[in-house]
Length: 167
Image (cartoon, rainbow, N blue to C red; front, side, top):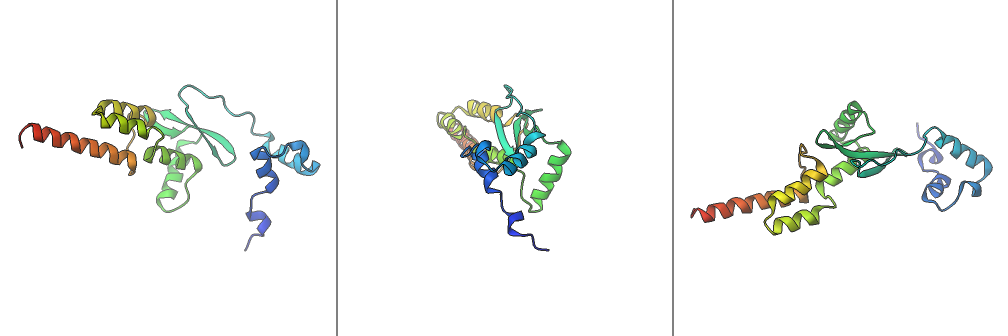
């Protein structure tokens, strides 16, 4: 069965309301009541905690991404749900916004310039400290610019050691 167009596209009133371009009072009373009823069960967004630096809108709610047990993870998702979603992604499905955000931080973090600067000055331990602070000490680096920079720095360090040893 084919869905009607109205069921497949986002509601323009809801998009305008979320973007802050219109207030609930400017909407038709029935639309405003329906949208207010939709968001009534959510409650206020959780307050930020010191260890929760990242926030992501995921399925209409604001979720936290933080370091837990040494790994950057989606705090507001059940671990079983995360495993199922990661399996779906591995099979070619679309990832949750939380998982997309974690992947983006692993591949091209905002701290990448700080890591590059430390590596340029030979401060490998300082660069790793920045990475651990961002991703956690138990993180496994995924392919991307961050991993490339760290691998390149490690190779340069090995080359320099071989040069100093006269090999």
